[in-house]
Length: 350
Image (cartoon, rainbow, N blue to C red; front, side, top):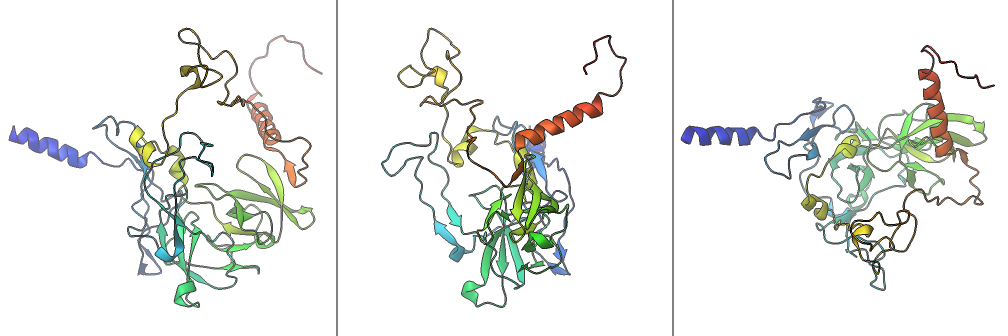
């Protein structure tokens, strides 16, 4: 019995063995020890827990061992009050919200307006308010109370590195922020402005990025492609950060149990067809029913296939819509795969 118990304890100790996607680690930068490696595609790791409990059976986590273990920089945080989906009248306007772990909001510098001042990356941190990781910068040329800023951390940015924001032409290094007119074509960028000086608008979520395609098609505008396939023009004087946003493996995470969803402040969802007619347009009926109408919200708004874009609203800076780009890619894939095969005797279309 003792040997069996010892074997079980050894197995339990190994139960959280990691099935890693990559193991490359950079423990130091320029000979100086850092608080952890960078977070990029090459260094990101995910692991699946062994099924010791129902909650860990299908759970997939992203490794956060490279992140800062301590508290956030307190002067750059603010109290975050919970509203549980209620508006100022106390009525629920967003369902399935409430509870969750207590958080403090991290103030992020989306404008990157400290021009031509080098900053040192102090550490990479976890932010509970967003999917991306954040980096704490220190501007050594400023007084202590103004020296620190939080930014969205791009992939492969590591503690100890020096980055800079400039409207001039500088080296397109990961973390540097520069105007689109100085960024080479084909470069992957993130935290992109739409209005000069307005702050980052596109590509702020985990793993997202834009690609620069052209700078001459429209005067004083760069043509960029979004991950959805949409192509649009952005003024050349808008700022963008070099590199894609960190935490690219966020999308493969599986929470594994209802409790972890509740920790995020999400409450259970009840299907409309399981309700009474007084509670939902799809409720009621004898036995199990399909709802009797297309899927909709409690207020009757169509849930699947309902178009929200206004046709009359002009979008002069959109060069190619998402739908058109996806259709073009689909036709291209058909053209590549439809070359061979012994044909049938069907009539040829003119």
